[in-house]
Image (cartoon, rainbow, N blue to C red; front, side):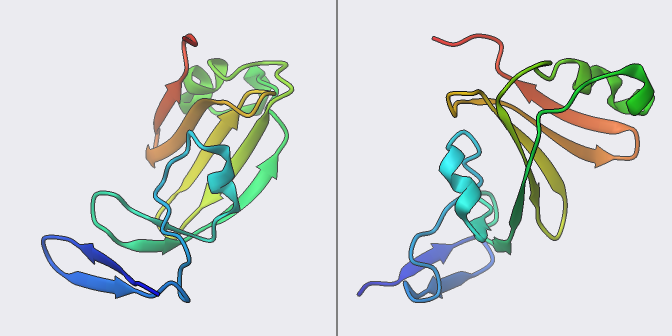
Length: 125
């Protein structure tokens, strides 16, 4: 059984397969990443404990959001029968959206007070 070696500019770390059978990054475009309990930060090599909560797709209205989130939330597929997951780690909370077919369609994360980063799929190939 081979181990994994993660090398960064600051350190080299060995992870055994018993510890982590498969190393996953924050590959949010793959819906099955939501079954993981640890994810690797691709920039730092750091493993982070994560949890996922399956949410219902959000219904957007001016009454249920603060102004800083209004633009980002307004771009969320309204009336979608897709799925939204809340990914929680030590540093942040990320919302990831999938279509009814399981394809990634969006991501949202709070960066700072009154700042929201949103990715939305505009078209499919």
